[in-house]
Image (cartoon, rainbow, N blue to C red):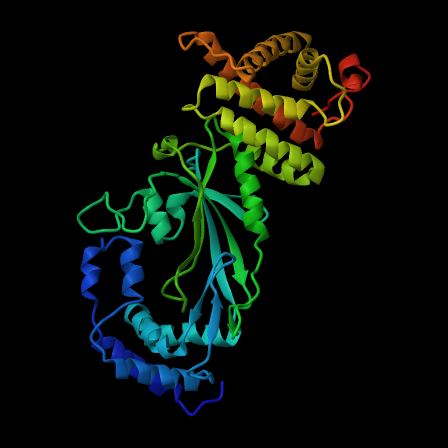
Length: 420
């Protein structure tokens, strides 16, 4: 940067203006313990004239060698961006100086304009798990408690931390009642951040795409439905010149997601095995496993009707055991034979699995043809519970094998083996 503006004088001036400014009256509405309170305080203030703010904006534009009337476009995350008028830079710098100090506030903007790169943390909130500890589950993606994620408004809302002072149930602008306790996190770099005249190209985030598949795989380490509730990108609001949260987006939630999951130990070895095994599979098999996992996850929804759960469970197992080019016919037999040979090499265990698969197939057939179950029949629920557990174990075995078997005859007739 080449400018007639002296940096030390600029820091002193920012500090003086920040000291003169005061909190906006609206700040009293918010809970001082919430991230939203800190966010408002780092962006808004009163007590300065429009001339004082615009004068600082002009000096900042001179210092950064940009036109005060330039059309700046900023990419905040892979999902969104915003325009920034240099005339309002003074407002942003003063607000951050009140929270972080004049030196740190100016440094944040220096980084923005000289490096033109922004490091973010991607966060995906997950319902159905409540891990006690954090660990890297896949290629830079970490699984851990949502409470360990640094405070931001989305994180506070999902953890039930009130935004408004005095009313823990009112959260302006959001109607989210889900209570996820787990989060996947990863690092993401926006590069470039700023462009003049047009928006920077939309950066893709492969980790976010992979995180969706990680959530799918996590249904194999839980006895519950595992759901992706929301995704956003965040950074330190004191160290960054731009808003601390971007790209907030959510999933459709159900009443079940409003119940909190108690802390539990996650089988880290199993979690890594299924996730790493899934990503090691051929893309063709990954596509099928996604269908299988989605249907198994749907079968875990306790609030769904037993008929819906039976259909989802049956489809999950059938999608795993039947190949697209299989000839039609003898579906029930193949369902039992393939599932039992995949489940175990022990003859007695195979017999028991075949009996369970026969019951599952019959339940699915009844439900698929419009039939209903007697709600008082405990055997239906017992079959669903046992079937869901069996389906999970079959998927894990396929992932351990590394591929979905293409030819079942050798396995069924004994000249091929499954060694896992």
